[in-house]
Length: 372
Ligand code: XIL
Image (cartoon, rainbow, N blue to C red):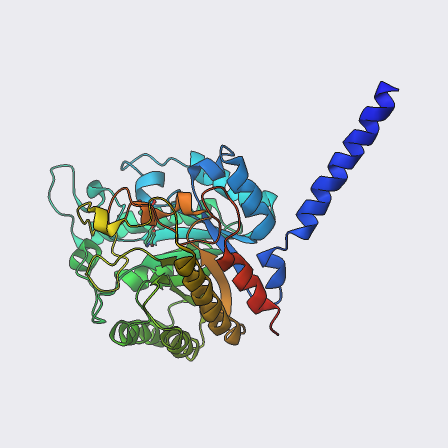
């Protein structure tokens, strides 16, 4: 009798779980014929410690990016020491769930250890020595995941806001062809991988002009570049959807794929530096900059939803050129915007709230998919 009852109870519970999973529509299904819906995942999610986050990642998304796991300082902390423990788990996670796996990133001026640019005596390296290090790093990292990581952000944030090349140590020591070299090495290490140039503020016409010129230069030199990533760290008040539309149009006209790579929409007060995603920016804490500690007012929640819908209408318009739309995090609790550019703020830029529940923005994006 007991056994019979528990069998029935078990069956009812399983049915309820399946029904609830089936009744929660998935973003990846709504946009299946358009582009991948990606998400940046963190160490707790990669290692299975964040089970609620993992359930959302597995049910809603069909592409992943690592928020930090593949950055130089993580995989290559010392000259002769690579550490692939977390990165291996990241790639295995994506394979287990049949996802489009992104590698982020190979060359950046941030989260790269100081030793990379110096010799054992502490002097700056010369061009050839730094190129040798760059090649070793790219061959080792890209080579390890050959055929398993489908798309690499080869160079991240090489441009200034005025469209000129950033005076990073990569640029200063090697010269402007460090970009060409990085793409060449990545192509040699995995000829099948999609190779991407990734940056923020490409909605700004001056910076976009710089990106267009850069892509054209690489194309003229027959350097293998397949895609441009628009980070899309947006705010409630800027840029406009029309500016996003113009940015995607200008890049797609070059014949490359376009990816939205780090989407979030910041609802917190601006710190007054204009639009930026410069991770080196640090602004002092101030309660005026952190107004929603107790919760987000409905009016702002609605503004956020409307804005996500407006941007997804733009993305859909470009569905032929867009390979993916990746959110920079699963829930608001996980967002980097809780700690940048001001530490310890309560931010609300993503689709799932701090309890992992879908926000009105989630429903709004689903709604856009069914407007067709
Ligand atoms: C951020 C991560 O999300 C944070 O955890 C880390 O502390 C700093 O970097 N542009 C990028 C991403 O290309 O790599 C950055 O990620 C966010 C801005």
